[in-house]
Length: 109
Length: 115
Image: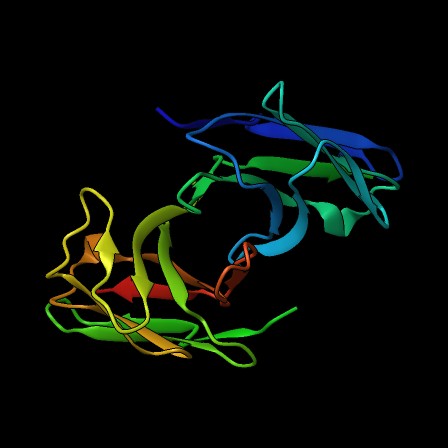
């Protein structure tokens, strides 16, 4: 079966760095997405990785290792507004998105 | 990024009535649209995938006669919740994708409350 695993909840301190991991087992691979979702709102796109390596975009970076079925989202200089759920999703061979359950990130002052 | 507009953002309806939710791609042609529902503190659950001009493909366990999906044009898809019951209360979200592009853009979501 297809499976996406990510931690349920993480806590970090304002100004610090946090890494949210995601491992996956899917039928084929056409890229991995990270989305941010604030409570009561729809997800917003953060990053897309299809090749191995690190993609940096401002305070957020995303890493992919296809051989290991592994990705992480790195958030630097954490701000209180970064408190949200972070969803990892993999596009399978049918171009369907397989979603993880999301990681709730709590930022403390 | 591209814009997907979903309407209404919130709706309260009486049990037994039907509710229609619209999803529009404003600046691109959405050949594929996805409908999700999300319960509090849970991940997105794909309900159905619709391609313009053809019948929607429903995920296992989703009643197609209850959740009617129409994707009649390249910019509009609708989800109609028929004979709504309190257990249908949820957050419904659409997303749209253009052609071979892999990124899907999300609408703002609709909070449905059935009383």
